[in-house]
Length: 199
Image (cartoon, rainbow, N blue to C red; front, side, top):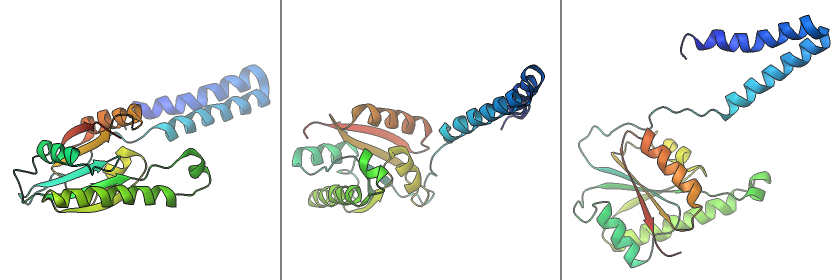
């Protein structure tokens, strides 16, 4: 944290409390103090770390993380993905496929994540099988529902030099575009967003 921010935070808490006590008495001072603390808590909760994500591989090999929001199983999509990721030229690449578990609103409130994890695993099985048919061997992982968090978590243990986000038209495009923009800004690895047609 920058040195000038701490005094600002202290002033943001102290000034309303002192002003409340001076102008409205103890009740107003306590109320304004509670409001100042509540505002600071809301701001702190909403802030997310914005530092760089991942480490670049140091072994000289090619490591690729494919993040899929849908199954990539039809032959045209697989050919396009393999070509755009350069996997047809490099059979030596280590590939890991990551599928975020997309949890619905009611499932989140009920803490029922099994359906979302099952759908993510089905996406992975279809995608990895289609890639294998195209001659690309890949590992598979299920990740957090938040795309950026899923990638960040995965890159804690897998040093990828390239990350490719694969989505489709109509796949919650606004949220995917926001995640793609943030990944493009924060990733140390090369980043590419591939949008496929179809379902």
